[in-house]
Length: 422
Image (tube, rainbow, N blue to C red):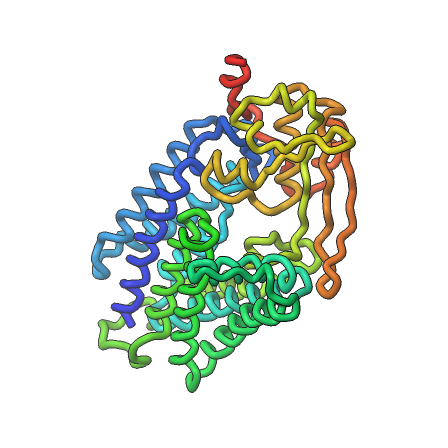
């Protein structure tokens, strides 16, 4: 068991370093995409804190990945990693990527749980990811939107396209994805089916890598790296013998029920059930593991045609042509992928903050509008909408959220270089 946990720690360190490299712009002070801190007090944080945080992250990961098991340096390194990730999220909510959240929880578990407890509790956490991810896809929207999209990525390398297939066929094949994920979650909990579940989990992640890879939908490299980590994680946590190797007695195990060992158990138990709170809007989309789900809240940002001409080319390329009301759609998702190499944080409070950053940086008053869409009804896919026009309406809406919905005050929100050149 000791070797299993050591390999998992090293896999986490290598994967986190690779994902940091793939999304490096996300972890630096932003000038091309608005930073929306998690709390209002962090809006005045200086830019050097981002550089410091990234340096600490890399250093902690190098220590965690290199030092041997007999050295105790890897334990504080993992705790530093988790706390620094939290601090970086406080500075910018976009950094609460699903993989960063997962790695922070696993790091705390590896660093604090006794050897005999670590594998069962980490298994519980991973099973909860599969379970909640599957549950979030069992709805009308996934069967008719994201499901067929992923399906098209899977069959594209074989020269096929589901666009011409009957809707009942694409919906049925889409349904197999969450059902398979749910069966994996259940199978990992039952010893009799565990080996088959591990094999199914590996196949599931390989299929997803095929769907979003360069021969499919051609998504960012971070998605492929994260799925590769999931494959290694499943093999290490459930593969091999269930009998623990002979290891010296850990002094913590002699009296395991201490705050140091019980606290991480409580944490993992909490984060494993917390996604249920997303039904009432208390848990965000990614911490609820609503991955590739169609149900979460949405928003559409617009500027007028005249305002569009005042934006720099780096943003204009993500703004559509005017409709018959003279409003142009701003594609926040594409802008985020190009500017910071990562998807936008999928909460409307962050999108309102992005809209406010545009309004303040380019003096947009009544020339900006956002349409906020509620989470979709599970069985019909219908949504309710609210339209906010003008900076004042955006500002008032930002004040209604529990967490901050305004961009950073001191760091440049949007680079004006392109505007000055124009």
